[in-house]
Every structure is written in C-alpha cells, then in structure tokens.
Amino acid sequence: MKAFRLDQLEAERAANQGAYLRFLRERTMSAGLYALDAGAQDTQGPHQQDEIYLVVSGRASITVGEETTQVGRGSVVFVPALVPHRFHHITEDLRVMVIFSPPEG
Image 1: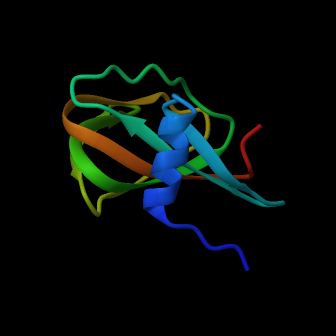
Image 2: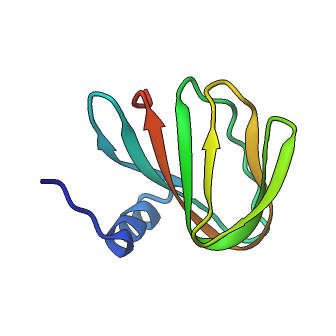
C-alpha cells in the first residue's frame, strides 16, 4: 500500500522550492500536489493527459477552454487532454491535488 499525508507532501514540495511535487507514478496514472500563492500567475500549458484537480485549500478562478468557474476547498475540475487551462484571480494560497491519466512524463 502507498499512503500519503497532505501536510508531509506540502512540506516536501516547499523544501524543493517548486510549485509542483509529483508523489505517485503508476502504470495508468500519476498524482501530484500543485501550489500557487495568492496573487501568483499560473503559467502551465495544456497537457497530453486528462487531468482531475481537487482543490485542497485556497480560492481562485479556473478557465478551461472557454469556460471559467470559481473554485475553493472541495472543488473538483476535469480538464481534458490538450485543452488550454489556468488558475487565475488567486485570492487565497491554492493547494491542488492533480491526477493525470495516463501518467505524466
């Protein structure tokens, strides 16, 4: 079994000074923790994989393709492969669990 604690993942991500920490990679999927502080700019581009975002904490807007919605703790957003998307108007530090299928690079 592989089990993870969000507080430990966040500490590892912060120690590595990166916005993203991939903590799981399996044959059919991968998972990571993505962090954007309030006021930050999300510079990610479209991915080759489908994605699911689960907002762990924070508040922001997300645009997927041409649709925009506000997200906060507990929000779940599906992003199809190759569709442009980004978080914006980040008003509270954002922490997002990301699941890719198939696994990212």
